[in-house]
Image 1 (tube, rainbow, N blue to C red):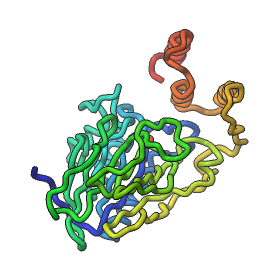
Image 2 (cartoon, rainbow, N blue to C red):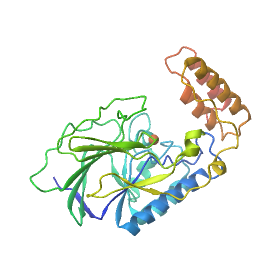
Image 3 (cartoon, rainbow, N blue to C red):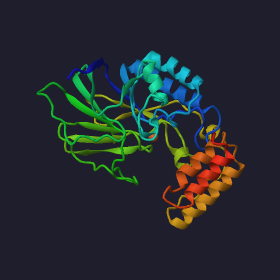
Length: 317
Ligand SMILES: [Fe+2]
């Protein structure tokens, strides 16, 4: 096993940036520039602290439909820092990582250290000793355990992009339990930060993402943070990323009631539609996102709705 070796004091972890040429949801202004500025701030901070930057998946929001100018800007920025990037579900098209996704362009340009395979990813030489960083990209298994070579590593840290059973998560596909041989599992994918949980020798962390995608009270209240892991840390240390005021990036409007029952969900659907009626969407992307979030592909009327959508947007939405 021959792994790349990098040196640093630890890892600076950047959760799910979801960068996009076309702003998702109701984001206003130059979304791509806002996210690029956050990424640059994180890379600069990592350099100041002599930390290795690592993106926890979903670098992109749309896997393919990103303008060349955004990719050129990203190549220019990322080429200076060469961050490690885990492949998330949003980085793939139809659940596959192929040469026609935007991430593949960054990889071909040699500006990211892509983690697209499950297993040990690289070795990190720290002042305290050698650390193994492993990873499970989207849709790959999280190992049951990791067999450590005698005394080679002071810590084994594993990056994931999965639905893990943190409190208040709807999809609990992976139980939080001890993984012998693994000290830390650090997860992207779940955008809301969660408190770390320790089971036996394994601490599970979910630092949350760095981008506000959805207009909600929660997005208004939460902080935008990167996280720092060092070999001696008891928990991830948070670093607040400079970012714009909530009402600079979202419209000044009422919050929807946050209720869970079906009737309320239906009225939420209608209110969302009403909101779309007056919202300025970008070439139908707002509607596309709304339909993707709300239409169940199993329902018989769904095909008709998508056909209507395609007709209205000329297939370019
Ligand atoms: Fe994500």
